[in-house]
Image 1: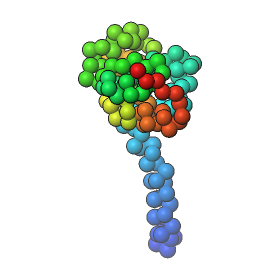
Image 2 (image 1 turned 90 degrees about the horizontal axis):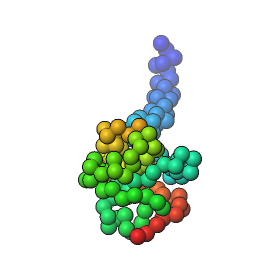
Image 3 (image 1 turned 45 degrees about the horizontal axis):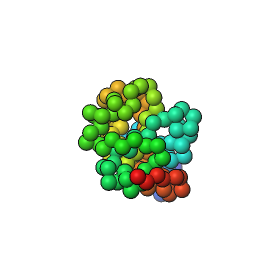
Image 4 (image 1 turned 180 degrees about the vertical axis):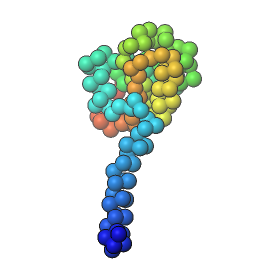
Amino acid sequence: MSFFIENWILIAVAFTAGAMLMFPAITAGGRAGSLTAPQVVQLMNREKAVVVDVCEPEEYAAGHVIGAKNVPLAQLEAKLTGVVKNKATPVVLVCASGMRSNRALATAKKLGYENVHSLSGGMGAWRTASLPVEKS
């Protein structure tokens, strides 16, 4: 017991360091299914993933992932089944920052899509990774 009393500062530092190491894993729990830009490219190349941009048409026209299909978040529940017919096909949802695509992820899972992901950081992360952007 005297060890704990004499070394309380070291124990507090160890506990704080452990908490800081666990923080990213804990906060990522709400974003299950999130992928980085390089992981999305691999999924597109290896498994022929369909990229669905959930931005509004104006944002989509300003720049999107090459080959992405535009289905605004408000219309996702009604139109996703028409865009991606096979529910086993890998689907990557993209938006400007990653917030709308995380909400879209829940909608897609509710519709029965088994292999659906969100681009973490959205188009900002895509551009930061210097990946190609298409404008329409």
